[in-house]
Amino acid sequence: MKRRVLIISFDYPPRRTSAVHRMTAMTRYVAEHGWEPTVLTVREDQGVLEPALLQKLPPQLRIVCTPYLHLLRWDDRAAAVVRRSGLLPVHTNGRGPSRTGQWLRRLAALVRSTFYFPDETAGWIPFALLEAIRLHMERPFDLLYTTTPPRAAPVVGLLLKNLFGLPWVSEFMDPWYPGPRRLRARADHWLYTHVMRRADRVVVMVQGHAEELTRQQGLPPEKFAVVRNGFWEEDFAVLDNTSVQALPRGFIHISHFGTVYHGNEGRFFEALAELLRESPELKARLRLNIGGYPHSGIVEFIRSSVLNEITEFYPYLSDRTQVLQMMRASDFLLLLWGRPEFSRQAIAGKTYDYLRVGRPILAVTRPGGIQELIQGAEAGWVFPPEDPARIKEILGSVLKNYQNNDVPPRPRRPEFVAQFRWDRQAERLARVFEETVVHAR
Image 1 (cartoon, helix red, strand yellow):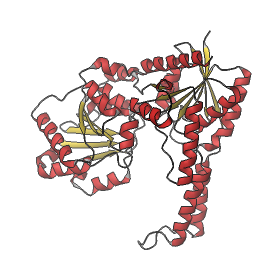
Image 2 (spheres, helix red, strand yellow; image 1 turned 90 degrees about the vertical axis):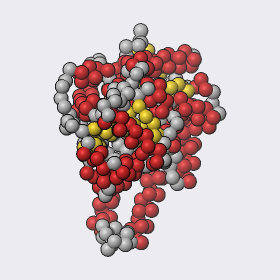
Image 3 (cartoon, one colour; image 1 turned 45 degrees about the horizontal axis):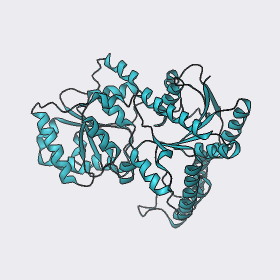
């Protein structure tokens, strides 16, 4: 008889966020390893939806959706009222916001840091907790599995653990970064520590994150398990049967996909602009494709520099097959992950798609998980984020060799890349579930 696991995740199909591919895959494949999952998530009919993800799930899967208090909508309405009142003018002749506007912004930030705890999904906690209790009383579960971010799910898991003593696996897809305000940072630290200590096992994405938590929390290393993100092998099987030319021919295409958070780009774009100024003949051959959402500073720099002549922005790519086709049509795939805490503790989910599609990777990152993956797969080059001279030197050499018809390196260790198929990572998670239940007896 299969054991029953309650999966508590705010982000779940058909919502389209960076987290849903992992949760879709884990739900689908743990069911093949002796577990009967039930999913508890939010009822959402707005935002970016991707119903096709539901087709990847087994038809017998039970998904329970609850309403929630959408705090950000209240935030938007309050801001609209303030703007209509005239207290927060749209502009003040270029001098920045008025004193009243500055005061209102500070007040709004204080309110968010106080009431949006542990984050803006706090309005889901009471609904999810009551529904989880009802589901457990109806037919008891053998295990709880919660994932974050966002942070509502581990709070529900903590409360259920205290109520019923159920074995609990708490997963952190990203580190729990504390709030900027002192009081909020203390509250975050208290909750974070409490979750770490009460959870029976903690799952993270990177070995370096597990090692940091072991040191910081004073917990035994065996409490932590690394279960990485991955890729859908079936998506690439479909891709192999298509012949779409997704990017214009005749150029060397460097392509980035996904969100770029502030600081992750390092000084890559400065170095690339300087390289083009020194080697103007590259402009006729090179194309920079930005698919996704770079922060405004990147867009402003590109628009005001020589890069504007070679850059194409693709701000919204809803079709995953189209994204993978563009990856395959690229000559190089750009990965921007330069902030120290990101490099040490997390890995961008798209890294695994980059590895599987087989195009050489240009990674702006520090020592950490992404560097280990690229070196392990022999899949490309790593650039030091804050050293534009070194970036320019390596990039110039790579592009020069490519123009001389040298074949760029593809991942030369396919067996290394294959371990990140979703079904294989879910098998690892199922073992963590089994170990947790056994040791909790």
